[in-house]
Image (tube, rainbow, N blue to C red; front, side, top):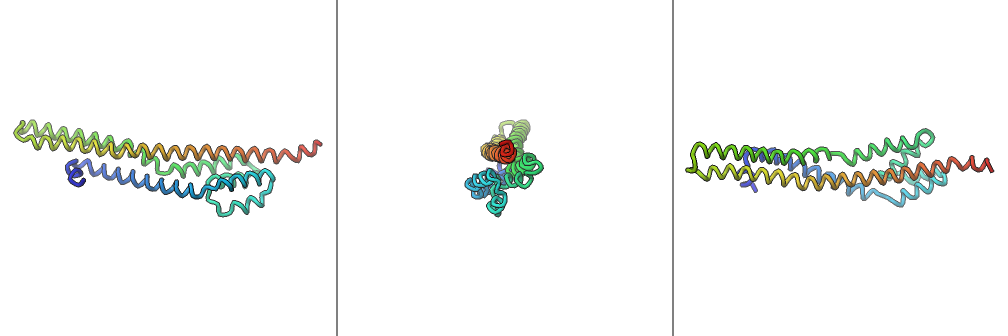
Length: 208
């Protein structure tokens, strides 16, 4: 690997930096989603919605203490602002959570674009060097010419080797964030419906 790295020429150094950045982001996001999955508590979410249906706000406050479930945090934000603007409060909280889920993905997206371009740049410089040697020495020194071609192929392969797994990782993490956003929207809408029904109960009783 070291021999290939050296043969790849100077472009391999920025490619190495790209690979380190991409790998760091991928590992960080994997650990992030593992933590989020461990903190998810579907039973608590359902329990909170049921308590809200009954209007038992004090019990909700007790139940959600210490919870790290992002859905619960968003619902709590809406509950705390139920007298003013429940929907807007949850919308703001959800935006913060989704931004947290998509953190560093812009770096991964940049590496997906930059790595192949650096590989192509290495290809071009390697071929130029080969033609320069070919023009200077003809075919008397074929090893020097093939070294330039090897440099071109190595940098191209390195750029693709960084970009391809990064694309899969980016799409996976982006998909996780999208699915989380849909789950948040589902439960936030459920809470708004439950609260609207709860507010209508006194007026319905008065009509009877």
